[in-house]
Length: 117
Image 1 (cartoon, helix red, strand yellow):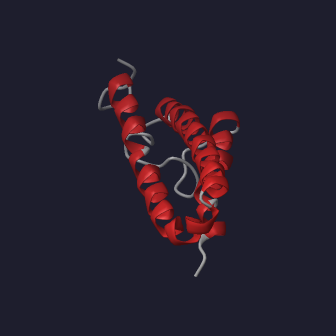
Image 2 (spheres, helix red, strand yellow):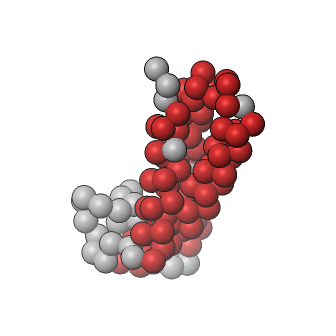
Image 3 (tube, helix red, strand yellow):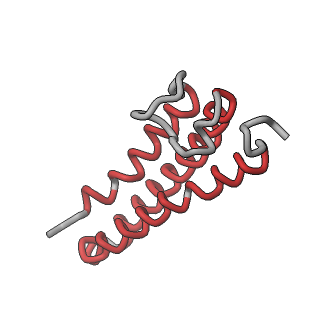
């Protein structure tokens, strides 16, 4: 099965949600939509900060992944279908790893109670 169209899904989602989190983050802390971790949901300040950091990371990461995918598709057209599963797995790993810098930024900026250091 050719997974080529699916390899563009995660970069597109990162770009869309990165832009949303940067320019139109969810206003209220909620359990449905947004960057939801125990640190980010401490208060409105941590919530806004987490979305700004996550939005920037996801937007940049999505644009870079999209550029790399486009280049790979052009250069390796014949082998791209076979490699698409590995590309998809790599993107999933990158998406999961993107939570670590956001959590580190929250930890470096706020104390355990959500107050700025």
